[in-house]
Structure formats: structure tokens, C-alpha cells
Amino acid sequence: MFSQKDLQQIQHKGIRIDDINHQIKYYRTGFPFADISMPATPGKGMIYLTDGDEKHYREVFRQNGPDFNITRFIPASGAATRMFKSLYGALEAFDGKSPSEQQSLIDDEPELGEFFQNLTDYPFYNDMKLDGDVSPADVLKLILGETGLNYGSKPKGLLKFHKYSESERRTSFEEHIREAVQYCASRDGKLHLHLTVSPAHLDDFQTEAARILPQIEAETGFLIDISFSFQKPETDTIAVDLDNEPFRNPDGSLLFRPGGHGALIRNLDALESDILFISNIDNVTPDRLKEVRVNYKQVLGGVLLEIRSKVFYFLQQLTGEGRVEKTRLDSMVTFLHERLGIAIPDRLESWDTADLKKWLISTMDRPIRVCGMVKNEGEPGGGPFYVHADTGEMSLQIVESSQIDLDDPEKAGLLQLSTHFNPVDLVCSIRDFRGKKFNLTRYVDHNTGFISQKSVGGKALKALELPGLWNGAMAHWLTLFLEVPVETFSPVKTVFDLMRPEHLT
Image (tube, rainbow, N blue to C red; front, side, top):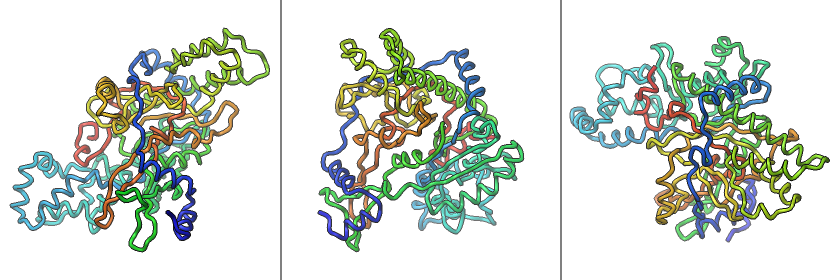
């Protein structure tokens, strides 16, 4: 299948030939659907906290969090093209039409009409520098085109999201920094943020950081360290044609494509931190709404630190030289089931002490993540479910709807019963109880990727995405779900979202 030249190309990218062969196998067989058993709900796989509980965990984090090496991790690689999909469609419709005809089209589209009506309120309006009478098409070209703001090709992190005054208009990148200083700083006054970006955007991010950091550091007294990384070339996946044969470029070389955000597990693995807070670049709020977000970040962190401490204590007992009584082992099982929502294998009662200890160690000695979950009010996003593994064991997982067999009435029904969805609000512990960093790539479920159809040069192809970062890439982590208020979730998926109440200052 592969020539010597192909093998050299594969080797140059740093990809193992076994990985390529596995990818082609998945193209031919497809990925199995997730075997969901039931949705996680409060009391059944999801932690629901009282006001007193929240106060306790917030204080746990405030007292202990600064002693850890914390990094705020933000995936920020992608361009904002999809955010402006409607504007691109309008610009195409305007082609060849007079300004009055363009206005007629706007009048027929309420969302587009509101956009032009509210144009002066958008935080990027001043940067457009409109001069004289311009047509609607000219306005859109100024926003999207290379000779204008070029917003259609820039990453979301560098777009103006919030307007505080004519002179202060912040990017989502700046809003993330200003939020992180309120909960991620260490006791010695240092704050670490890490963003994954595309190589083409690195200079712009560094320029923006140089512009905003001096003022934030002066205001807070913190020393802010921002680092960047790229999606690694060895995580690219091979493309195939519709017959599942390797797709080739006009020069005969193999076509590789980025492996999706699941590839970023390698970037996470390279960080020398104790604790990571993760959320998406477009999920930010202006200052007036930051308090509730910061409070619940601290609650998530407090839950993680307390659970981490308990798990580490158990593991030290289990791996120590002293004998652990059966009653003590049973109490650990009860803790895992009742406190962490872990499904206990039916065969556990027949195990002897040695087998029980082995199961307890393998269950707890792994990375830990606490995932905030929001009540489902119609926003897109994966949800929390109990999922059966090939081994027969059941675990808590974040599952996308694309991973569920909607042709199976039972599975489709379980999806309808789901009450919460994933806003991507995670806090993670990536060191073991001995202080050694986990090899995060060992905890990936490689059977949870995704195949889509694309085209290049007018030719159809199939593309494979690796298991998603908070789906299959963290499938074998110790996972807890915690209900958080919907106020903590305010994504900007389209340009129109910038006019939602939660994004107005």
C-alpha cells in the first residue's frame, strides 16, 4: 500500500506506521458507538452541592489551591471562520446586487437585520474605521476580508468580544487572563497560562500578550507567564478516498490532516503542572459576571483537591507495607461508589483481599478530573453518561451525540433522558500520589474517534479525528461530574452571540 517514498514522508512527520494502519482500519470498519447505560444525573453519577457544600469547597480551594502548581489551559488553535458563517453567506448573496437590493435581503433576514442595526454596539466597530457611505457588502468585507479586520481568518482569542468604553475593548484572550488571575495564581504571586495556537497565529498572540500584560500585572501585582504550543505534527491523521485507500495530493504524496482537539492530550502531557483548569477560548464573560464563574471554578477546584487528598491517602495505604483490613477495603469501595459515582463490578463480592486491593489501586491510581455540567437548555454539547467498556465495566464519560446510535430506540431514548450537557469546564490533577506525572497518552480510548467527509480540489475524501480531548482522550481518567449554574457558560459560537445580554457590559 505504501511506497518507500510514502514511508519516508510518514517517518518525517514522526508518525508510526502502526498508527497509520490502525487509522485505515477505522476508516474501513468505522468507530463503535458508545454503549451508554444511563445518563448521569444528580445523585446518580453527578454531584449536586448545597449552598453550604459550595462554601466549604470554595474555602478548601482558597486555602490550599495557591500551594499547587496550577496552569490555566486554553485550546485556542482554530480560526473563527464558523463564527461568521452567516456573514459569509450574506456576502455571497450580496454579490452583483445594488445597495438597495442588498438592504432588501437584509430586511428579509431578521438576524442579519439585527446585526446591521446593532453594528455600532459591536466591540470591533471602531476598528472598522468606516468612512462615508458604504454598502452592506462593503461593511462585511471590512469585517471579514484581508484588507479589513480579517476576522474570518483570525483565531477567536484575538477577536474583540467586549466593549467597556470607546477606548477599552477586550479580546477573549484578555478576558481569560483577567478571570484566571482571580483563582489560578500561586502563593508566590505567579500565574501560568498555556494556549495551544496555530503557528500562523503565534506572533499575533504574542503581540496581544505584550500589549495587555503590563497593565494587568500592574493592577494585580502578579507575574503572569503565558506559554504557547502547537498541535504536534505526529498527531495528524491520514486521509483516504471514498474507497478507503490513501488520498494523494497532485504530486503523489499522502494527504495528512490535523487530528482534531483530541491531539492536544500530547500538549497537556508536556506540561509540568499539578493542576490544570481547562475551558474553551470562546467561553468568557465581561467583568460584571466574572464573580459567579470564579466562585464555581474555586468550587470545582476544592472538590478536586479534597477528592485527590482522599484518593492519595487510600493509595498510600494500599501500597504501603502494612496490612489493610477487609473492612477498610470495603469502606474504600463504598467511598468510590457513593462519593464518586463509580459503578462497582458485580463480581466484586467474590474477590479475595488481593483481588480487591488490585481493583482499588487500578481504579484510583489514574489522573483525576472534575467536570462542571450545566442543565440542558438546548445548547449543543456532549453529555454525561455511564458507559459500558469492552471489559464489561461501567464508567462515567462525556459522550457526544455523534457517538450514540440514534437508530437504536433504547440508546436514543437514553439520550432524551439526559438532563445535562458538557460546557467544557474542567479541573484536572495530572500527578500520582507519589508526585510523579502521569503519562496521559496511556489513558486514551482509541475507539472513540470520528470520521467525516471533506473535499480537496473538488475530490471527496474521508478525514479522521482522534478521540476528543474531554471525550475519548480522557476516557480512562477518574471522572467526577458536578452540576454548575448555566450562568457559568456563555459561549460565542456566532458573531450574533456578542449581542447576547451576558456579553454586554
